[in-house]
Amino acid sequence: MNFLKKKISGWGNYPMIETKLKQLTGIDQYESILTFNEPNIVRGLGRSYSDQAVLANGLTLRNKMSRILEFNSDTGLLKAESGISIAEIIEVFLDKGWFPPIVPGTKFITLGGAIANDIHGKAHHVDGTFVNCVSEFSMVTPEKGRIICSRSENEDVFYATFGGLGLLGWIDTVTVQLKKVETSYFKTTAVKVKNLREMIDAFNEYDQNYRYSVAWFDPLARGENLGKGVLSLGNIAKYQDVDSGKQKNPLKLHSQKKLDLPVYLPNFALNKLSGQILNKLIEYSQSNAPALTHYDKFFFPLDAIGQWNRGYGTRGFIQYQFVIPMKDEYKILKEAMNLISSSDCTPFLNVLKKMGKGSKYLSFPMEGYTLAIDFPISKKLPELVRKLDDLVLSAGGRVYLGKDAFLERDVFRKMYPEWEEWQNIKCQLDPKGKIQNETSKRLGLLSYL
Ligand SMILES: Cc1cc2nc3c(=O)[nH]c(=O)nc-3n(C[C@H](O)[C@H](O)[C@H](O)COP(=O)(O)OP(=O)(O)OC[C@H]3O[C@@H](n4cnc5c(N)ncnc54)[C@H](O)[C@@H]3O)c2cc1C
Image (cartoon, rainbow, N blue to C red; front, top):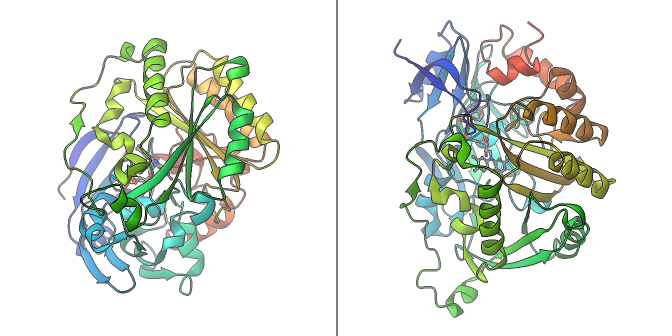
C-alpha cells in the first residue's frame, strides 16, 4: 500500500502528529478501505482545528473524491462525492443561481467535513446546522458495508453521523439541497456597541429582521468596556438591490487570487501589541462595511489570506468555542471574558453568535450564545481552558468538538449526555474500532473495545 509518513495537524497546527498519509482518489477505494488492517480516519481539507482529522499509529486517508454526480436544476438538489468543497460547489452553481444554504467561516471545507462536525453558520438561529440541508448520504462502514442514510432509512445513523467526527464510517456521496439566490451579495448593516449588555440587547433587537448575524468584540477591552464590539447583520440582496447599486454582475463569483502567508511567522510576532493593531483593523472594517457586501467578504473574510494559520508561528493555536444555554447568559459570558482577561493567555479573535435549536448526539449547537476565541499555544493555556470548561459545564453548556484540543473525557461526557447512545451506534457499525482519530482516543469514544 502506498502511503507517506508525515507529521500533520488540524488548522491550528497543534498538536502535530506523525501519521501514514494516504490519498483516496476513486470511489471504489472506499470499499478497499475495508481490507485495510490498520485503523484509519478520513480527512477532508483539514480545517478542523486540532486532532479530529489525524491518527497516529494508523492511516489518515485524505479524501480527494470530488465529482458532481447529479444535479436537478429545478429543485437545486445536488448529489456529489464527499470530498467536494464548498468553494467548488459555489464555483459550479452560483452563476445558475444556486448557493450552499449553510456555510461556515471558510469555504475551504468538504461536504464530508461539514457533516462530521455538523457545521453551523451565521444563520444558525434560523437555519440550524448542516443536517438541515442534507437529505441523504451513503457511507461505507466496517461491519455493515455500504449503507444509505436518510431521515427514512437508518435514521439513527443519519443523525449520529452529523457531529460524529468521521468515526461511524467513510461518507462517500452526499445529497444536499442548494438554495436559490438572485444575487451573490448581502444587504448589510453594522451596530456598534459599548459593552456586553448592549451586545446582547442588540442581538435580541435585530435578530428577527436579519437572517445572518455575528458579532466581533474587542478581546482586550476591560472593565465597563468589556464586550465592546460590532454586531454585523445581513440579508441576501435581491436583484433590484444589486442593480440599483450598479453591480455589473449580480452573481459575481469569489476571486481565485489571494495572498498567501508563505512561511510561519516567528512565535513572538503575535503579541499584545500586534493583537491590538489587528483588532483595531477588524473594528474599523466591521464598522465600515459597505451596505452591499459580496458573500466572499461577508461569509469568508479570513479566506482572503491563504495559510493565515501560520501567523501564530510554529507553536500553533487553538480556537476555543463554547455554547451556553439562554439562562444567565450575561453573567456567564462576562465571567468567561473576565477569566480570559485575568489570565496570562492573549486572546486574538473573538466571535459571538446567538444560536437556535440544536440537533442530536454529538452535534454541538444548542439554543443560546456561542463564543469562539483564538489563543496561541502557551504553557498557561491548558489551565485557562480547564477553568473555562468548568464554567461552561456549570452553565449547562458545551465545547465544540470540531475545534477542541484539550477537553477531558469526564467533562466531555457531562457536556454531551447522549454520548453513550452515540457509542452504541458506533459499536454496531464498527465493533473492532477500525475507525479512530486522536480525538476519539482523548475523549474515550472507543471505550467499548
Ligand atoms: C477559518 C475557519 C472558520 C470556520 N468557521 C466555522 C463556522 O463558522 N462554523 C462551524 O461549524 N465550523 C467552522 N469551522 C470548522 C470547519 O467548518 C469544520 O472543522 C469542518 O469539519 C472542516 O471540514 P474539512 O473538510 O476541512 O474536514 P477535516 O478538518 O479534514 O475533518 C473534520 C472531520 O470530518 C471527518 N471527515 C472528513 N471527511 C469525511 C468523510 N468523507 N467521511 C467521514 N468523515 C469525514 C474527519 O474524520 C474529521 O473528524 C471553521 C474552520 C476554519 C479554519
